[in-house]
Length: 305
View 1 (cartoon, rainbow, N blue to C red):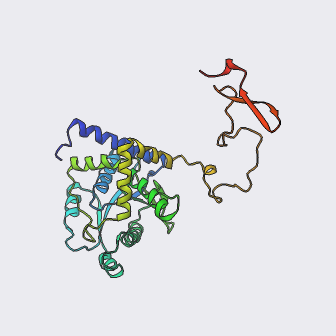
View 2 (view 1 turned 30 degrees about the vertical axis):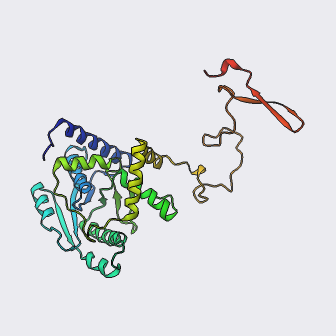
């Protein structure tokens, strides 16, 4: 842990603790008596997730169980000893799941094509079954704020859907709850944290270090946006938490067909006119032929500076 004791690193750790604690609280992710299966890939994010959850487990006013799980997908050259050695030193309860998804992916996907989608589906199915075998009611994944924003734009640009990666959801088989405790954490902070902790990182090399090109393009675009307009990714993430269905166009989400004037102020209604006490507000003065004339409101005392 090269710089894990420096004041800068300690502040970083506290920021991550605070962000994770807020996400856990906002979405009621972990309750007393839960058994949480923590998915450990060997990447920076999942290492940070396990470390922060272990730290929380010691300090939390509730009792919950953590089981770290790594899926060995049988990629050629995968350093199978790295994670067991690390977890043994850590003294955490863990399982190594052997499932040759590599052979299936290579059989089904033509050479040169992106394997990420099939690999992800196979991995998810194995992990759901593992959670059931372990009696875990929660499955913790290491996705962070940037992952969630990228997924939103991937679905928007390539799938035509306003759909993201929620901090908490039920698995498609209905048996478990998936949680993402790092939802409020920035990727850059997690990368710095991983370097400070000197985690034994294992790269994903199932397909020769192939990357999902669409996701990488979105990531680069967002990084360019953030560089040009600092804080933009934060604003986008805030937008994912503040949705106004009446101002979109989903007829299942909002009753546009039954929409009628309510004859009362509507907080989310369209602002047709400024209120009378606003500076520069205009009132209808008179009609002259085909012309309607508006003038400044007469009550200047109420107008704002």
